[in-house]
Length: 49
Image 1: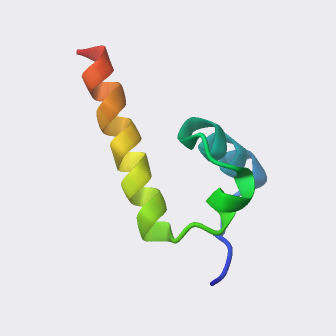
Image 2: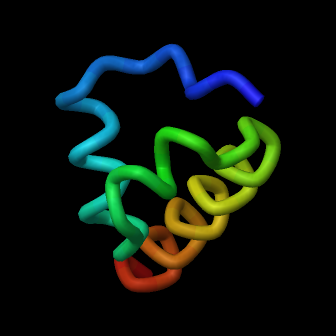
Image 3: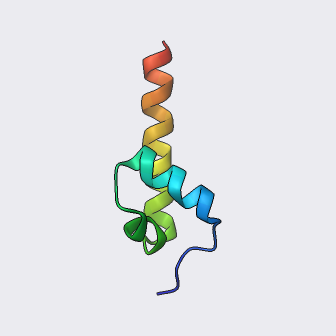
């Protein structure tokens, strides 16, 4: 599996927000990463309401 095609800065921000190691973010399948980002977004929306 190929690493994600994202910048280092983006990968670092994702790793921090998902609380996972940077290497895990870079090798995470794209569909799983998108699902985790959707979860984070939903949690943030719930916190704001």
